[in-house]
Length: 346
Image (tube, rainbow, N blue to C red; front, side, top):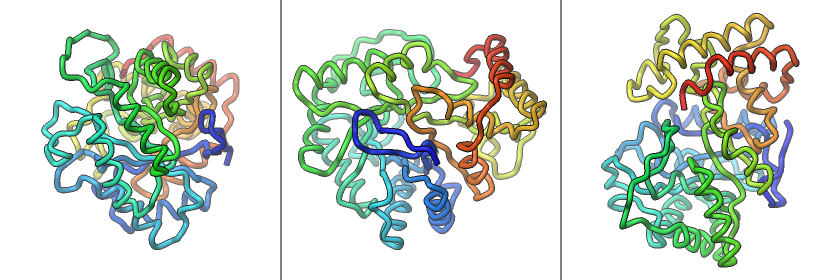
């Protein structure tokens, strides 16, 4: 398993990161434990979770995913072998009163959130603590175009960063990152850190896959030049790139079958692009999902590729993508499809 540096730190994280958001919803505790055992045995040392998981978020299940990770630490005694990442939720249009009465990125909320996460995770420190999405309304979660909205009650990035810096100084958090951010947000975190001598972000977790390469437009150069690498999430576009939903198929138990709310990658152009990529993979004797993951793995701005699975067969295929190197012919085929279907599912 290849390892890459996490930003400007001395931490080496595996190219494949184990995503966890199905644990406690689609996966049981025992299945989660089995996945963590297998991933570690295959050289994966990086686990990513969040206080709001599992998804879809619900009051009655919130926090179960972190509890699964904490139970694994308690049973296996392997905390020192894992780089652990989790996230704090920010303001949302959803009614999430179960999270601190409605989550914000203020100092008070962040300090409470990290202590709640530490308790569920059964650990006394988090290696990478990430802001799950911005406090402000901007273009993320499937929105490409930016429409400005004046907001008078925003928690400033300076306050959020100051709170995160306090957690680093307390030793509760080793490093900090952001997620679902824009180029402006990334640069503002870096600017304030330099201006106020605060902790510097080391990573950005945004969507990146063959159906959504928008990260390349405004963030890829910044990720490389500023040494704030991408932790790519949804690299299989919610499994659209595996071929399991080809020709309108609705496999029993699959996420897009069970949860109608997940529509980000199911529009007509996204479906057409998905089928083109699946066909390209099959023409070259490749597993479609592994080809899609291998493409993400090959990008210079990517620090780690966050995969998720609901069974061990999927997990094995996903982890084994780290061993796959794509030929020039396959890469040319990918670019040809990309030109035809440019970011059909942002």
